[in-house]
Amino acid sequence: VVHSVGAWCALAGIMVVGPRLGRFDPETGVARLIPGHNLNNVALGGFILWLGWFGFNAGSTLQADSSLGKIALNTHLAACAGAVGTFLAQTLLRKPVLLTHTINGSLGGLVAITAGCATMSPTYAVITGLVGGVVVIIGSYILELLQLDDAVGAIPVHGFAGVWGTLAAGFFMEGDLFNLQQLWVQAIGCAVAFLWAFPTAFLAYWLLEKLIGLRASNLDQQRGLDYSEHAERGYPEFDRIPLHKPLAG
Picture 1 (cartoon, rainbow, N blue to C red):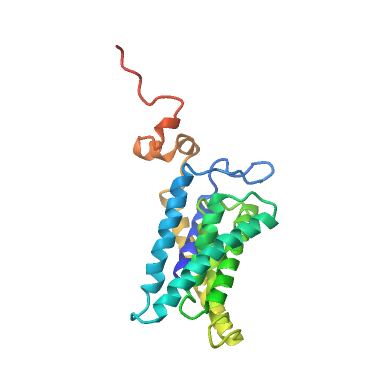
Picture 2 (cartoon, rainbow, N blue to C red):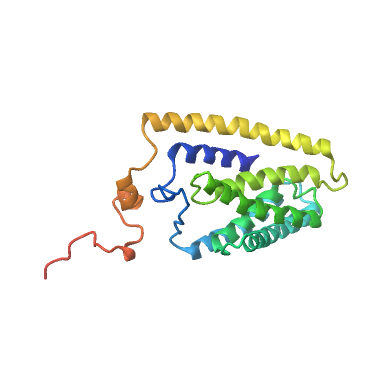
């Protein structure tokens, strides 16, 4: 619920604001890659999230008992399987194996296992994470086909993988596997989260866009928001034109 609600709010936001300048070809609609500035920081961020997830999942239990070990194990296995699932999906689709997608796949595995980390066996935790990684890749390509610009992959990771994980928590519950009634309950929960979060967020973003504006102008996007909003360059080493004239000497 936590992850999917955030994702549906993000979906509403990108629908109202629209894609970044140059993200999609204006004639063909084909997506253009806008790479991040620092892949090392992307990898570091993924590692920090992975490490923090142990506290997030295991720390959510009401008391410290023997279940903590299984929760931590399931969390780690799902993250590993998510990265593998992303790798397999990119390979089978004959797409380049991108570091950003692989990291998002591991995060998708972490999101997917969050709901069922205490109720699944390690075997099903691996399956849940593996499918979560595949869902992230497929979801990313679906958004591109719809010309929805998700700059960080939040919707496939937290939304699509989150829904899958919620369903898997009911379907793979240890001691009560493949219970269709529980699966139906989980599906209702997913639907309620979407029907509450998405319309509410869309209305809020739409009103803000009409009243004060949310989208940066084309000129501001070309300059970069570091400069447009803060009058500074986030990456001055890549500037072709100096911000200040050299001092006469």
